Length: 273
Image 1 (cartoon, one colour):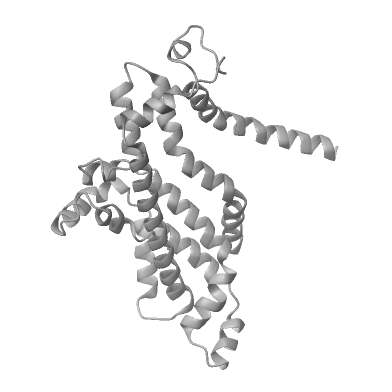
Image 2 (image 1 turned 45 degrees about the vertical axis):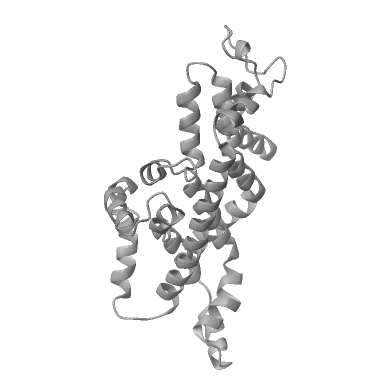
């Protein structure tokens, strides 16, 4: 009975996994088809012959490598800033007593309920006032703090035994030493999980980079996909899918390489909370 139950659970997990993975698999298959095969009817899933010409055309029709570099730089900086600010803010809220802490924490939670589209106009005026349009600063600074990251790490930090902190105090250590030598190492799964989430979220941004960038030298991967589509929609879906595959590859590789740590960090943080 136990084996039958495990088999049923496995099947129930495989089915949604296949459903979610199939669109990505089909995108890759289309990118490897010739233009004639892409348009044939009835359509086929697998390409009869692997054709990498779509990738060559995609690289020639737009500066995809520049788009990739911009997205890597922007996403990496946003991830770094969000992780640093989340660690510091979560530590202060979880381990330090100060006046108004509950109000501050409530305000941080409230920011999680505000749609990102609501902040675009005020952020745009702020970036304009600092002359940060079409720059990395304009793409990064408005997203340097994450309420979700603070809340996630707060849930983890507050479960670290107080006895450990008291031992550090008795030994003459400061709060900063306790944070660096004990809190961060013990919280690495949660920090890594948030870092991956932060990077992928920044990578997938479309509306904000579209608003604050003007030149192709500063545009990101998501805008590059839109540009490729506008240039090739009437001629070749294979080229569009090839560009899409190239521009989403870094996030796929990152997630596949760290999925165990990501799942572990989220689950551990949830159980600790």
